[in-house]
Length: 292
Image 1: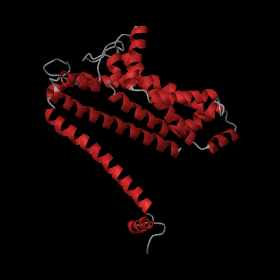
Image 2 (image 1 turned 180 degrees about the horizontal axis):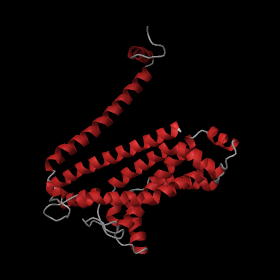
Image 3 (image 1 turned 60 degrees about the vertical axis):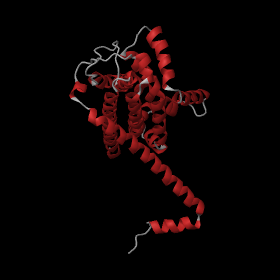
Image 4 (image 1 turned 180 degrees about the vertical axis):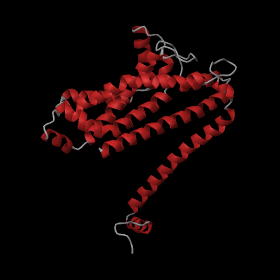
């Protein structure tokens, strides 16, 4: 017996034959998807082919020098940079989105200005953030080229992303959840923190994951704020470099192109691992909230 409400490829093809415009749009979508996947596969395969043969034990030495061109300090520093940047950006971004969506009045001009500003900040090139961080954090606040200066600059960069994703996640929470909570006698604050925010956690974590990806892959802003010193940071005021900056520096010198490709492989693996772990955490938290 043929399943009900199941469209086969033959049925779709017959429908497309009667509507050439839909067929053209379908082919264009398939072509765009193929080009995107092909470009992504080409970049990944090319990096792996060029980088894997150049992975040597010397690249993982604890201390960097001109002989081993070790990436180990640059492999550890992104963890500090990511944690410190999220420490600044996540609370501010989430609470700002909560205010804009839950407390601010509808049609408030201030809310409109904040949203326009957020959208504008999202489109500013990272080199501009680096220049701002260099002038403000490094020179005006006398933090010098340091882990703290870089983290503060990156926190400003990812703040619009976290704000926007959190706001969209809060908007997606049905109003019936809020109405039910108010009907049971809960106040505004309790409703937001016990009902709305837990329901929006998967969307909020998605924004944080995207922010982590930008932090790990950023180089232009960090060159002007965190510096390029190849050592593990022991203090937030130490100058340091991340993997992306390390790859940029050694490739720019023109003497360590093979090591730069090997660094690119490690950076690719690190990004995949971080995004994978973050996605698992998001799914687990989202599943617990749904079950609760």
